[in-house]
Length: 349
Image 1 (cartoon, helix red, strand yellow):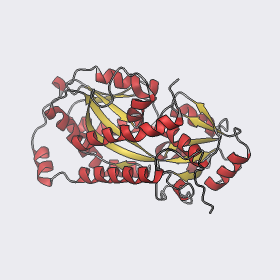
Image 2 (tube, one colour; image 1 turned 90 degrees about the vertical axis):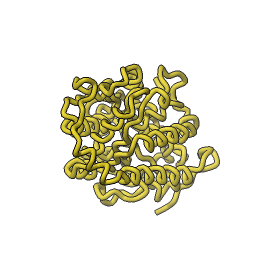
Image 3 (cartoon, one colour; image 1 turned 90 degrees about the horizontal axis):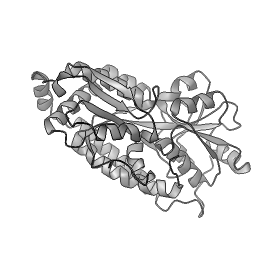
Image 4 (spheres, one colour; image 1 turned 180 degrees about the vertical axis):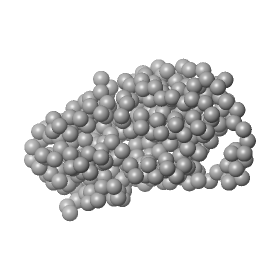
């Protein structure tokens, strides 16, 4: 299979291979941290009665994306488990818009009593550079609770596209610049950035078509109105199995068993790797005891065999990272995406 390397005109001003290694090392550390909680501490937490948070009133998890997307799916999964663990209602509210900033701003300005949380995603750190002005600080105005999961994405295409793998796509895109298009579920999202990184590293020109959410973008690719899309494994797996989409490649360093025959894009485009993360935050200033109670509830939910199996079957890796390690990861991810965003020239609508 031919190898495509970035030309001098398309090579990004950072080393994709080094960035990939640093990111994989960081995610590996977070996964190790999630498993490192002493069993005695876990048993002690299970043996003690859990005091209700925020006076026992319902806990809201705000999601800055429409219903049906990966963030929404993960939020509803973890909300159900946390509700059982805490003994009080945990509900999900969708507040889409502005790349997740509407929901984030509401949480940043909420009382730090644990009653209002944010299920955020990679855009939380991308937006720190993407937006010139934000009504909040993505790092200082939040209390990281736990990294819930990481999800590799896949490059899918409408079945009518005259390419069945990444080398064929690159040849097709180079032969007809500007004819193909990417469906973009959210401007500035990690999936958007994955598409721009792909174009930069292959020297191709593929038009971006923005949508207001993953679901409408995916709908148009399924209908053949758009050619291509980087999408999470959770959203596209049923459609791939039904033959309504074809997978050209996966963004993970290794093949994904859910998509047999789909090679990692990095096998062809050296240094290419992109995975989305999803995490739970509270407002800044949340008491340590409240943060720990929420973290333990989320972690125990993620350790439930049924939840782990469900997420892993969809291609997600459950995490359950402790708050301190998640906070360090968020700071690092802001720096990681800054170079990508600046090079891409992306700007919000």
